[in-house]
Image (cartoon, rainbow, N blue to C red; front, side, top):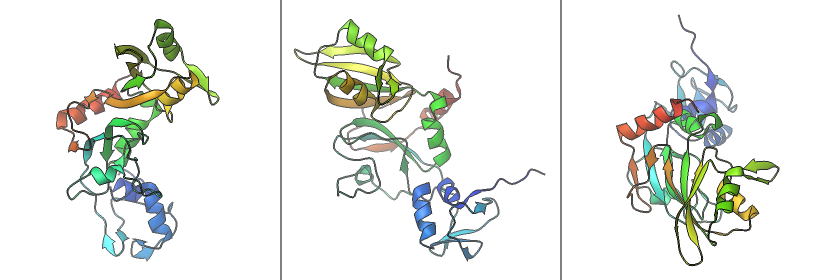
Length: 246
């Protein structure tokens, strides 16, 4: 007989698709969560999902159907559930009766483009895991005209904040009189990765748009809109994460 795996209570709420792990810890500290009819205040108390009863505010939890959305995040909104400064968030762009969904990674306020949201916390963690090396593709408008030396420097990397920041791939897409658009591909997701590289080179980012995550592309999804991933899109992402890195 296979032993049943135990996980912490906060993680259990996240795994059931009810809320994020940090939100679960808050609910538990507020004595709003019962495990097998007893209030628990320890977010790490062990739970067996298959047999234990979990209640929030007196209502039993059941596993939510997993939902996978893609959004075209507009510039000027933040990727959080709530904002202490009262700024518009990505959740203001969602419509319909949806369960809790968490963003898969972040796009900062000034950045735009493809953002994934899901209530499948384990899948989200796989997408973000460094060992997955899932490519993220960005179109970046900069306030200079690129040359071969700049492209080579972006691929070689710059040392910033005690670490090496570099692009996996980079090419020029088009140019104007005083600025140009670059396509930059990353296979790691350090905070403000592209902006920090370019700031170190004293180059200003005019626009930054994420256009693809692995094989999933933003396409013609309108700004501030979202839609479920198709079965084939989800399968392609899963396959990309399973593929060994060359």
